[in-house]
Image (cartoon, rainbow, N blue to C red; front, top):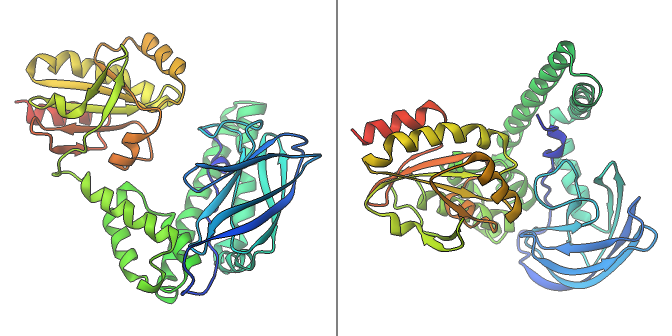
Length: 380
């Protein structure tokens, strides 16, 4: 179990006039990251594309550059020396909005985790804090997460006793309850904030591939005057992509590198049922699912089933090492750029789908024995 605090990154929004549109401005971003010392610091856009980089001097830095402002997109400061951008217990980034020409950042690096302490020069930051602090759940949020982090520490770093596991499960449940409460509170405020960009940013973070219909209903409630908001643009894109890869629709095509160095397109597998397992070497649940998939392939490969493993590993070596360890005898493809996650709207793995011989998505989110049951229904 990985500490939930690693994933509890508050997606923030800023309150600005509804008529403000995106524009490119010259900005000065300066500040300090206590504990970083003299290390490289990269300013990135919300899609993680690099804007510019600098080097801190005794924790301090200053960046002068042009960025797009007015649509409430978030920007990222990334310190490569702290850790990778991919899944990790380290937190090498801080997220924030640039909504004025001069922004001052104060952050701290402790135990391989960067934390934003304050953001000066940003009126939107104050409004963001006011919105979230107005939620009733804000009164207990720190206490609940402190309890979880302490329980996680006691079990994983002190002693793995039955009592410590019991406390960890109880603390984890408390976090789940809190997150559910905050979701209800935020969604309950929607009728009051249909022209609010910061609220659009906050509520948009609750949507993924599993609730596209709900996302569309929420998106439709926002006033057209703020549809240029970055979060709403992303939500609109998510909705469209969700519709494009829904069950009953044609599976989006892709072409990826094979484990032998060649390339193959999904469309070339037409004529067979295709089971695709999106996975990664570092994903425990993915690795535990592989023996089941191997058995299914052995049982149905001569009956019209093609199994495809698509790894989203960022490391070629890690991927190939896992292939050797798992000894998978079905087609293996490599997707280090995450092309398929965008095409198929998945944000968690393993993500397993079944496609018809005509290229139509038949099933999504298959796991365990359910995989065999569904394949048996089609390959009678």
